Image (cartoon, rainbow, N blue to C red; front, side, top):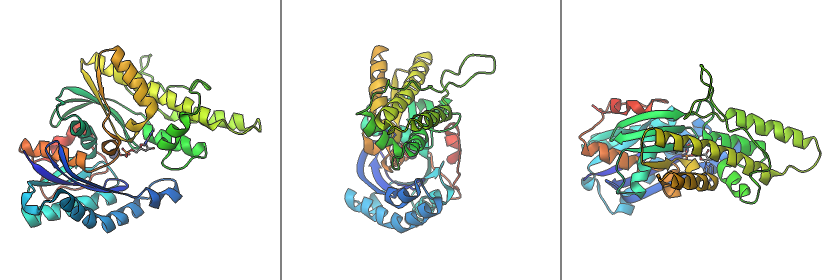
Length: 346
Ligand code: KG4
Ligand code: ZN
C-alpha cells in the first residue's frame, strides 16, 4: 500500500492529487481553459506561466483536502512526458524538489500511462490483460496492457488525434474551444446519417488497410469541402447535422478498430481513457458493439477521463509498490513511446 502525491502539468490543467493505491484521497484540478479560449488553442508559454502561478496552491490544497501532512506521504510523483516541455518542467521541478526536501522516493510518470490508470480508479477490481483505447487531444492509441509497465502499442493515429480532429472541425463549423463537448452537444439534435463521411483508412504498402491505425486528417478535409459546398448554396449551414455526421464517422472508426484489436489479441476488456472518452456517440456505439462480442467495456467518470493528477498518482503508486523509483536527474521529454516507460525508473 502506498500513498502518493502526484503533480500533473503536461498541458493546460494544473493538477495535484493524493491517492492510496487505487483510492483517491484528494483531487485538485485548476483548468486554464478560460485563459487559452480567446486564442482557440493552448498557448504553451502562457500555460507554463500559469502552472507556476498555481502549482504551490494546488499542492497545499491536495494535502488539506486529504487531511494529510508530508509525514504520511510515501512517494512524490510528477508527469515528465509526453507534453509541452515548459509546462512539464514546472510540475517535474516541483515534484523533485519536494521529494528531496522531504526525503521521499520520486517517480516520473508517463502521461499516457496515467490515462490508462484512470480505469483502475473507477474499477478497482480491474486486472490485466486488457486493451486500452486512449483518445485525447494529443493521442489516439490502442494499447495492450499486460501488467505494471508492460505495454504494447497496437494501433495509433497517423496524423491528427481524435480530440484534435474534434477541435479542428468545431473551429471549421464556427464553434468554440474546446470543440469536442460543443460537437457532442449539437450532435444530439442532429442526424448522423445526413452526410456520409469517410472513416479514414490507413493503406498498407501491399494493398488493403491497416486494421488498428486511424487517420483523421482526411475526414477533417471532407468536412471542410462539404461546408464550402454547402456555403455556396447561400443557406445557413446545417451545423447540428454536420456535427452529428462527423461524430458518427469518428465513433465508427474508433469502435471498429478497438473491437478488431481486442478480438484479434484475445483481450477480454476495453478500458477507454482521455477526453474523447466523454463523447456520447462513441460511448453508445462502442458499448453496443462490445456487448455484441461479449467484451467488457469501461468508461471512467469524466473527471478521470480529462487530465487530472489522480490517474498519475495511481500509476505512480503501482510502480512504487513494485519498487520502481526515478532518479532525481530525470528530465522532461516532449515525446516518448509508452512501451519505454521502464526507462523512467532506475
Ligand atoms: O485528455 P484531455 O483532457 O487532454 C489531453 O491530454 O489532450 O483531452 C482533451 C480533448 C480535447 O480535444 C476535447 O475537445 C476532447 O478531449 N473532448 C471531447 C469531449 N470532451 C472533451 N471530444 C469529444 N466529445 C466530448 N464530449
Ligand atoms: Zn491527457
